[in-house]
Amino acid sequence: MNRMDYQETVNNIKNYLTYLKEIGINELPVSLNTKLIAKSSEPGASVGQVSRLSENKLSADIKPKTLEDVKRMIGDCKRCRLHQKRKNIVFGSGNEKAEIVFVGEAPGGDEDIQGKPFVGKAGQLLTKIIEAMELKREGVYIANIIKCRPPNNRDPLEDEISACEPFLKEQLRIINPKIICTLGTFAAQTLLKTKEKITSLRGKFYTYEGIKLMPTFHPAYLLRNPNDKKYTWEDMQKIMEEYKHHKI
Ligand code: URA
Ligand code: URA
Image (cartoon, rainbow, N blue to C red; front, side, top):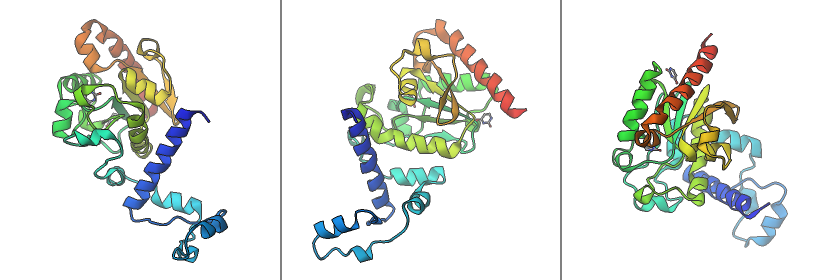
């Protein structure tokens, strides 16, 4: 296991344990390593008190079932440094049963203040794009890889991503859309675990956890490069085509 994988695993375990603690589970079932733990802990800690749920049962019990569960699981998150300067956690908004989900990078200033994704200038363009697809903003779901604003809108760091992405993953698992549309380099590279450029990634379908995923340009990029809007429009037409097939 390389260092990055190791760090990610450690972070995942840490987040999972934090979550368990938040929902009131202070002890873990002990099976294989019972003896080891019994030996290493002082007499005060009785292994006999530990609940004996099987691991499968435990994970089925605590997997969030609704977006509200995920929100609760995030709580007043302090899992990474971004909590220090945020005004609001930007969880995501829209239809819990959406068939199309848009995923951006991280909240900017407006989003941080309002606690909602894509409400600034880039967000207004995203709304126009969604409406041009003859969809409604409330009908789809909109989220970001990172839920707290990075200072001065800098790129999110590796450890911030590994602290935050698991929650998006749960949101996507619960919504279970037909199509995910990632907006910009960062979202595409994070979900597809690649370093390829957005110019070569966009316009093609990939698979994320069994869900079709189409990368396109970020609306903030399109505001700076309006000549590239036509490419995003091509990508949206591919999404609409694919979406129609699901409806039939
Ligand atoms: N219509 C909806 O209501 N939701 C979607 O996600 C897409 C189309
Ligand atoms: N840019 C993003 O990537 N996400 C937002 O929510 C707003 C701007």
